[in-house]
Image (cartoon, rainbow, N blue to C red; front, side, top):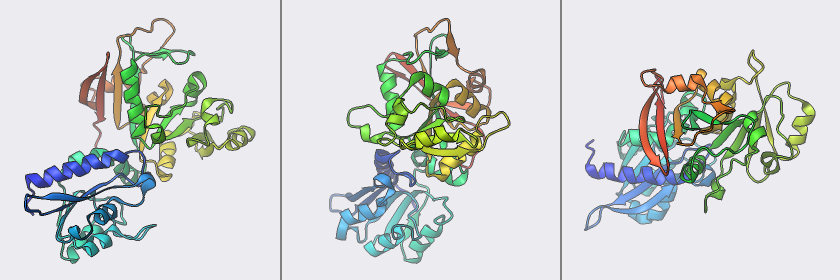
Length: 377
């Protein structure tokens, strides 16, 4: 089938629409859908839909409902293959067929074996023209978490780091050292809002006593699930994280032999205690930890600290992208350096990551890197 400039334009609009609910639809991906009908003055959008908060209803039935009778003979643009299986809601394919849609344009095939190709086959069997792969690369960014969870059994991992001019992450045993400026910190909150979960290690939790919520005007409800890697269940019940567990989900990844009384005390506060297998060094197995998060519906994971967690994930080749803020501040003596394994991996020519973006964020600079290793996502 011929793909026109208008097809690309409307798919681009559907992709932008899907971004509105990034981080808010787990375990389902955020999908965008547009119904476009012919009109005397040219094609006109008659229905819009994006996966609802919590994952249901899906984008397609919302767009079709908004379009009503105008959907008959129209084109549906959708960022991911419409589902064809019965889950908690009827198949989206059935709604598309019943609405009388004549043509469906899709960015990406859904790798979920319950859907993959079956949705397209059902639409074609109903006489609907189906066009696949329109603006696929652009759509992949917003669907990376879903693709990773289905194809690799782990979340898409973004490691966020902020380093000083002397390549330090902060001071040892000293909380809340401001390395970056206010605009960089605001950008970090936007990244949190777009993630299904944000993760730190117990060292960062003990030193910083953070909240890990989104604290930008109008985005408080977009705070992701907080995750702490805490093999020994040492998280203080009196800390900000534990005290807010009933307001914003908090998941504690603990070792199988973590103290039972401490686990019970934290669970009583609403903390979700998740046992994870330990490696030979007594630390939690990072691959097992990510697999457990994916099994619980987390597709996109933002990692904010600390140095040990960053080094472990990079060493195990479990980081998909890095957001590195560079600041002009110098931390000086007593500082915590950027781990050598991370510094080496990001070095040009190392063959681990490639630079995909570079921009000024206030007084700081943000460089984004993507993993180079062969990958199905």
